[in-house]
Image: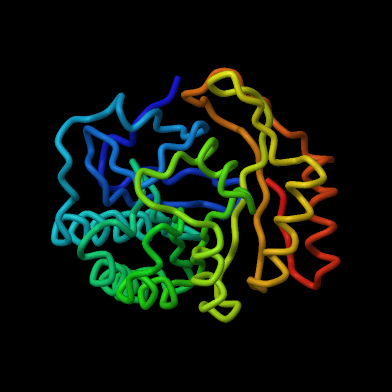
Length: 256
């Protein structure tokens, strides 16, 4: 069963990729707000969570994060990472850059060893303020699930205009200071076959990874409930094979 995050600060949880992760949700508590509508999203379909479309206020985020970090440090369990995720796309928040500045200051105050990470679908990286903010965090983890627009339309269901070519050009502008994250999966959706693990898909994706030259790539598959019930998880050994091909390009690749 898919579910929303019910607070501004959530966790900490033990992340497969990031360690002990304290989550920050900039999106509405009672609804979902995202520029994608991914068929694998653990929060469910956008249309199933209309609710109030209000971003969480910068002041509330800062106050709650300040109090939570102070408590975790006092308890002797500081987070390994502060992760922006939640009920949709965090970089859509109009005060995203200022919130990142607040978060870095709070991290430095309470637990300077912790990393700041952002999980993003990369739909807002055309905005200069978003790019600046992403370049300030330790881990800007940006999604690229396929090299083909047709597959992106099927799997990620962009809610506005989206072009793989345009996105890749914007990712290249990070000059390697980014992490690319890709969900690999198989199954069916609306009577169409879904599979971004085919030879054609993987080879085209690898070509784009070679162009983007990220400092790291993260490949993963399904681990939680999805709104589309006809999807299949890709097993670790197959993901490892894809990761080996990334590493052959001279780029570190993790499997989760």
